[in-house]
Image (cartoon, rainbow, N blue to C red; front, top):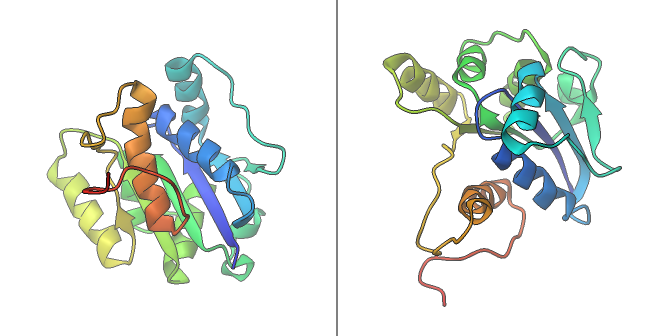
Length: 187
């Protein structure tokens, strides 16, 4: 069964993660019924600053504005399977943890949690304070998955993109999207 996936991009540092995630999912349209993307205002600025490029998405990728509460995934009736917030700022995490739906990203997270579907937050912050940790605990108890953008190195990545891909490949595994990646103890 094809998946309906939302990617929300916040203003946390780590635009490379969002770029690689979107690109890898756009390569999998044979497994995806719908791919929707929503950028916070700050996310667009961070993308341009960190990547020195404009956002370019595949023509089949649906783009929504952060204040568009008429987006299909603002309601559970649209039956989206997964929301990935990548990268996820601590502010967005806090609003999700406390049920504050002040934009499309936090509303979509609220919908995904209430419908018992998959919410993955790719958090990007260090060090963490107790508020961050407690918000992560709250989201986890509500059914979300906290997947910090912590790369692995056992695949011996050689470029920044390869380092970031170690995180994205784990996210694809969590979503249930087949991907060819280094697997521990497989040669």
